[in-house]
Image 1 (cartoon, rainbow, N blue to C red):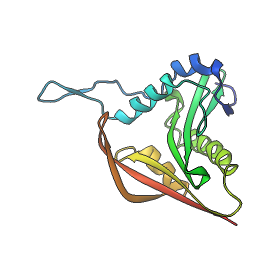
Image 2: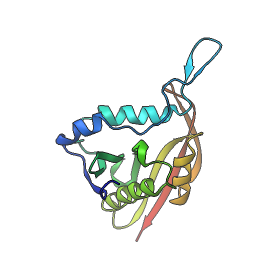
Image 3: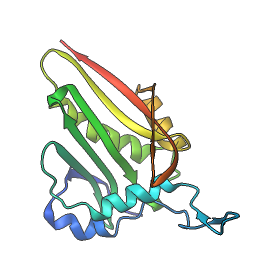
Image 4: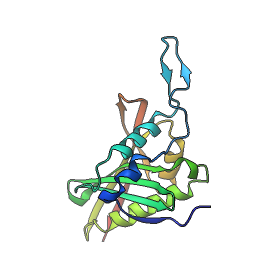
Length: 177
């Protein structure tokens, strides 16, 4: 059994821990197509894992990176950025180490809580702030997390050449004052 998870901003000394972060259990290449290409069934996981492994922490504003750490290293990773002052916060990535997945989203919920509590500190005294995230159409775990946390799926979609399929924008508006 692992120790309790502690949360904090990523620092320079975390670079080796992030370099070994693994948030996917899926073999990278699992099915061949007619053109002899191999297809990853959850390519968004590999993209986030690669992003975390290559991230040069500490990050500079407007970006922020939060890590959940246990006695074995990074157990959760959150990266977000603020654009247009605090009126718009973009949740870039949230990931849980592969050996902690499949537990009903408990650690993902805790990672989201850590992100949200930090983001609340940036909100203006009055007005509305929007938090958005682009979520792959087949990424059910994060879609479920977004629904649990009050996000609504918007109408905007985009494609990413590294991740086949559509990404939908999910938005949470927070009004203060």
